Amino acid sequence: MDKKRYLFSSESVTEGHPDKVCDTISDAVLDACLAQDPKSRVACETLAKSNLVVLAGEITTKAHLDYCKIVREAIREIGYTKDVSTVFNDEDCQVLCALVKQSPDIAQGVDDKAAEGKATAEQGAGDQGLMFGYACTETDELMPAPIMYAHKLGLKTSKARKSGQIKWLRPDGKTQVTFEYENHKPVRVHTVVISNQHADTVKHKELSEVLIETIIKKTIPKQLLDKDTRYLINPTGRFVIGGPEGDSGLTGRKIIVDTYGGMGRHGGGCVQWERPEQGRSQRRVHGPICREEHRRRRPGRAL
Image 1 (cartoon, rainbow, N blue to C red):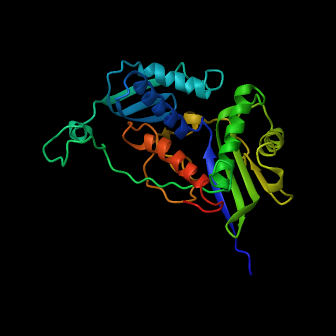
Image 2 (image 1 turned 30 degrees about the horizontal axis):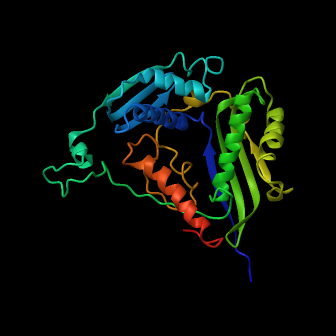
Image 3 (image 1 turned 90 degrees about the vertical axis):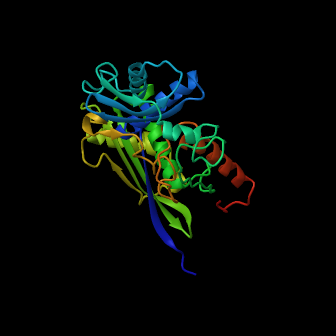
């Protein structure tokens, strides 16, 4: 019988990617609201470009927050300090807030009380949405191999940067892993791409060698790599200008990265910044439930 072979690629981004910077800021606002008022209703989106951060959305909360401080702390934690970027950093960024209370029309749908036109007095949701989830046995995390190893590479680069192991690494970056599948099972890594922001002092040859030996080969099991595996490291040749200085960022623009890397359906909504009755709680609750249910079933059977 002929073996069915095909390639599948998934990408991930590091915490310093412009879109992920915005996701992190939006989540930081949500977390700050919930820390003071668990009943907060939060829908906060973020835009970042150059030295400007814009918060826009609807927030109803009893919390008293310093949004500028929350934004700056999130940026500093990611690693955008003045010694890394003189354009986008925690000290000099401008923060513009366009935040208002939740629409009363939406609020009455969420409130656990009767309202004209509302079918019941039960608590509802402020919006509808589609959520897809499943588990598989390709990795210990019960996630598809391409997206899981792309995530692991990004995490490894962030740890190497923050620990000082690789001093010339900077926050912005992308990873991509292409697996070769045989009869629907991942058998080898075909291509690995890492594009990571760096200091202008490092040469491409050194950067490539270090990322292959220190990041890729320390992350991806050696049995999945072979002499034909391709390594594409900063293939444009230079990546000094990064983060919101180089590209604008927006909350919710990495929805495939945040789920299954394209290996499965997606409902279309993002999983950041949402109030408790919406997206993020569904991701945090239903994802683990799905994976735990899979552990009880026979190996190889996806939900």
